[in-house]
Structures are given as C-alpha cells and as structure tokens.
Image (tube, rainbow, N blue to C red; front, side):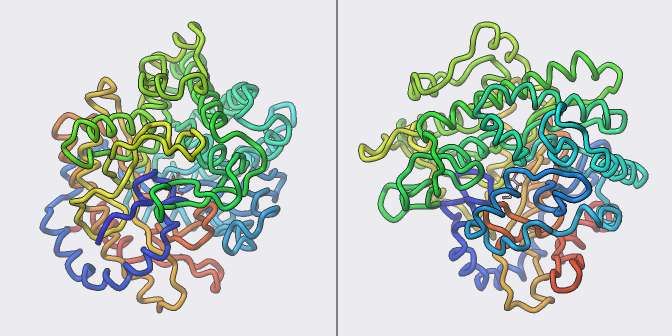
Length: 534
Ligand code: GAL
C-alpha cells in the first residue's frame, strides 16, 4: 500500500484523513495484510524489556476529543465548541460533538481501562475554559472544573499511572478569541502564562510532566493559513485548494471557509506569539516551581521525516528546508534564539522578528524536553512557489512534500524507519534533547457497515505500534535521548473537523450502547506487550 500524499504534510488528522476515499479503498487490501501483521510483530522480537524500566509507555487523549460536557458544571466554550455550534456543516455528525465520548463523566471507568493496558503514563489535556471559563484569571476560576482534574489526577496516581498533562491542546477559550483574537494578539502570552501558572499551582504537586502547547504549527497553518480549524481565518478564495496544489489534481485539503485574515502573514504572527508564550511559561516554571515541584516542562511539535525525493542537490536542499519550515520553525528559536536562516531568507518581511531581549529569552527555552508527534515521512522535492499562488507558508519553503517512492508497509500513513531517522536528526541538530514521542498512531476510516467483530479486529494497528517501537529502540541504542512513547489514541474519539469519521483508538466506542468501550485486538496486544506476556 502506498503512503498517502496527505499523510506527508503533518500529523494532524484533519489532513491525513481527508483522503478518506483512499483509506476506504485500502480497507480491503488490509485483509491480506492482517494475516501477516501478527507474524511480523513476533519476527521483530521487540519486548518491553528492550526499554529501560523508567521508560514511559503510555496512551494519549485530549479534552475536546474525549470529554464532552464543555459547558456543564460551570465550564465555558472553547473555539471548537463554538465552531461545532456555528458551522455545524463543517464537522460530520456535529450534533455528537458536544458529548464527544462522554469522557468527562466516565473518567474513573477510563482509568481502569488505562490501568488494564499495563501502561505507566497517560497523556491528557486540561480544558482551559473548563477551569477559566472566560480564559483569564479576572473572569474567575471554575472550582468544579478544578475539582474534576484533581480527581482525575488523584485517580491516576492511585493506580500508579503517571500523568503527562498538555496545558493547551487546540482549545482556546472562545471568550479570548472574541476579546482580542486569540494568539494572533500578543496579549495571549500573558493570559497563557496566567493559566499555566494556575495549573502549576493547582496540580504541580502531583503532575511532574507538562506539555505547554500541542502542535503550534497546526494551530498556525490550519487556523490562519487555510482556515479549516478555528478561528478559520484565511484569505483564499472560496473553493481554492488549501494544502497540496498545484500541480493539478493534487489538492489535499480544500481551504476555508475564510472569516477574514491574511494567509500570507497571519500564520507566522500566530506562531510567533505561541513561541513567545511557550518560552514565557518555561521561564515561569523554572523560576517559580521547578525547584520545589521537581517536574519538567516542554512543548509538543508535529514532525515529519523528510527524505530527498531524488539524489539531486536540489531535492536534498528541499528536504532541509521542509525540516526548517516545520520542526525548525519552533525548535530553532527555542534552542538557538531565532528562526532558521532559510525561513528568514524566504519569508522575508512577512516573518516577524524577535528583539534582542526576546532572542536571549528564547535561546535555551525549549524546556526539559521536546514532545514529538510522529505519524509519517515524506519525500522532499524542489518546487518554486507557483506564480499563480499567493505566497504563504505552504509555498514559502520552495519545496513540496510528497509520497516517498520506496515506502513499504501496511499503513497508508506511516514509515517506521522515518521515526528512527527523525530521532537521529533531532539528536544531531538540536544538542541531543530529551524526547517523548507524544503521539504516534494508526488510523482507519469509520465504516458503519462492518460488524462489531470486524471493528475490533485491527492487527495492522498492533503491527504499526510494534514496528515504531522497534525503530525507536534502535534510535535509542544509537544515542537518541528518548524517555517515552505515547500511542495516539486510547479511544476512537473526535477527530477535530473530521468528527468521528476517523478512528485511531485502541478502543472502539459504541455510541448506540451508552458509549460502551470495547478493546480492539490492538489493545489486547498492547496489554500483553506492556505486561511482558510474550
Ligand atoms: C494530532 C493532534 C491530535 C490528533 C492527532 C491525530 O495532530 O495533536 O489531537 O488529532 O493529530 O491525527
């Protein structure tokens, strides 16, 4: 099966899953693959004991994707709750969005499931507007929201599961969006800092691993360049391709609808403020909490491994630039204090600049680690910006991400070797930082005509995990400083703008039967792996 061209852009499923048709047609091909998947796993001969005992193997979720009940018990809406309400046509089954998978109410049951998987870490996010309904401290703290996360964290600790908390996972409080335009405005930095401060103060006695912001690149590009995520700002004409085109026929994601904005400049401004916000929170944690709480803080970045499409010098340079415009966009400022040279040269005056004071704050402000969300690899081809297109992030790198010619494997969106290579790249380029694989997951399209048995039969997912762990282990033996791996996702949950149409979960949810959770074959395999049962 071939890698989908969509999967090369980023980890965010909004992109990966748009090729629903491709994935659906791959379902029949998987029948053949399935038989061999389990055999393949045992051939790899990878076990839990190949990883150090203090290595975290966990599962991940995020508040919007699981909790539901956003506005119950005093919580306020996020930008995603607002979008589901105001633009119901933009999200399949948007009527189900407000309930997600009922995780807010079922957290105790869900922790039993996590425990049963034999994992030692759980990554989840705090809903900002659940504890600060107006987004800022001045708008008041919702004690019931705080109580909820206290109970969740306590229950995890009681069960010996280490909480890994994402402070901000795509769910900006709608109140701040309305008040000043969210992170397009530099006022965001102070509010994010206040909110993070509150999280450290409330939960930091028990939470020792903090992820500040999840995938700032997705926030910037999807929200401000192509408008498929809130706040839906972009300046692309109706019907125009958002990601992927030209050449003709390669549109991956159609843009918009656009609610004002400027696709050429705003993604860079948004990212700029997110970088400064992360750095401010790292400084705060270091100065105010770290000594006493003895925890760690880092960011989560989406990363694709880019291999030159051909041996030409042009494609080699294109691969470098694609790294710069994705991972480097955030890593370079946070490690070295400024944007990559190629971005400064190509984006020119559209790229905001850091003051000397900001540069010195930024340099060394990655935190204690970087979380990497890895789903796929891509080939890099030299491509000048098309003359008919407005300059914007997708074209600014003079490079095109495309399917890798020699991809082999069982998923349309993965390349395990790429994970190993990526770890090597990160180690060499960024001073061997500590890394968590904060997301890595396999998806299939939801297909309501399948029987329950078929829905639970996913050896390809088990094989996907095993092959990535195998490659990760090789990277570690080669010196990569990796401390954990979190499978995405624990459940089939809300896949943002794609609703429930894509399924990443180890567990299937039966909506018709009171959200009953069913373990898939992959969950059973993962449990055996973690419990060293084979
Ligand atoms: C990531 C995102 C997750 C999940 C995942 C699956 O970009 O952080 O929330 O949606 O993609 O595609």
